[in-house]
Image 1 (cartoon, helix red, strand yellow):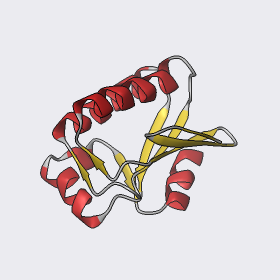
Image 2: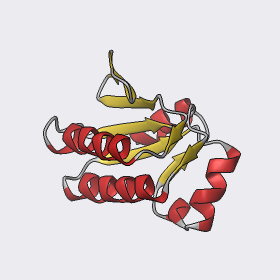
Image 3: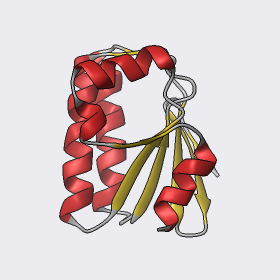
Image 4: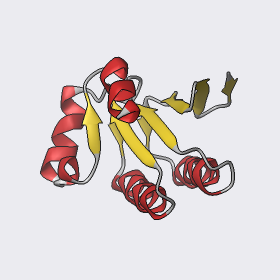
Length: 119
């Protein structure tokens, strides 16, 4: 398992679980660094099944939503799969309002997310 200020990363079989550690994702420098690390995971490390766990996140900026959108496009481009999980009800509203709930595969629990990546 790897970790840094932003993520805890666990490899479980062919699934890469990325647990976000920041509660509030607001700072532009943090967002840029997080984006680079997530893009690197897909483009350089070639993670083909990524589960992004939002359990610790209570707030995020629209800029980070943009990074997630770009990440999903990069994932699809290489034929990989991204699933988001454990998004709080408050954060879920953000995805609903922006209609990103239709763009991302969002699961309630980590187990459901892992199941979605197995299929």
